[in-house]
Image (cartoon, rainbow, N blue to C red; front, side, top):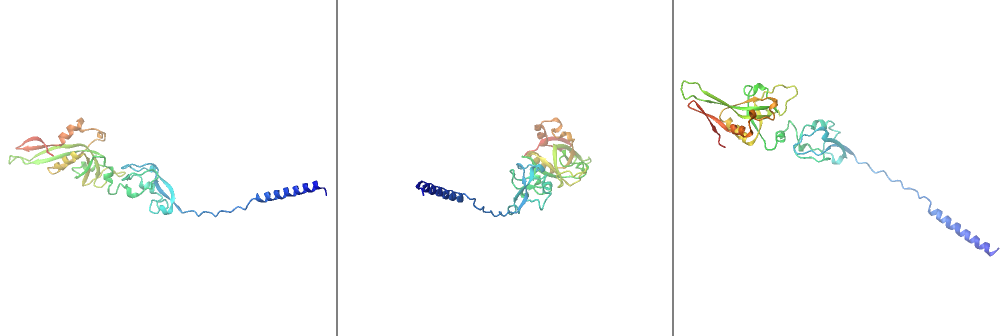
Length: 265
């Protein structure tokens, strides 16, 4: 055999062996099938859709359902057990602020019929104080929460003349005061035109609360219902200083003569 042919044959066999080796190395290896990951049980819980500030009324659009792990949502408001929770919670007042995405906890809310609701709706710097009323002193029961009233003080003084009739003095001591509640009803119920109660809770400034407390010890108090258009009005167009000055004055009757003095704080 020719030496050249032998060399060519050896080279060809070597090349074939290398090609076979390379081909075997590039054969696709069998794929390992990953085992499916176990899915954690989930629940839908109620969260804040947007930030809810302190004292802000909660509206339905402020809330939404969000998927959470069941283990983390056991003590939260979940859709499975309370499908109507958004409707139930709407109208509550935030006792503490919520940030968007935070779970709704009812401990941080105040319901309209729950304790703490009055403190939640009371504006900053204002006070709530109650006075006794009756159909006769409360406009026949036609005064409802959020109405505006004047507070009238009536006092009976004995006439220095033994045979004369007692002298009765009446004056408006507080004007354009908002009624927060009648008894324990802070809202007007749908369809109710009158609400007869024994107490009326009024929204007052601190100095007005002092005036009302003093007046309650010296005579009978009555509420006069004001027009709904008087919401932003002061007493008969007077300035706040004039209203305050008048609210701190008391008529004193001595020997049948009425004199006005300023009450001392």
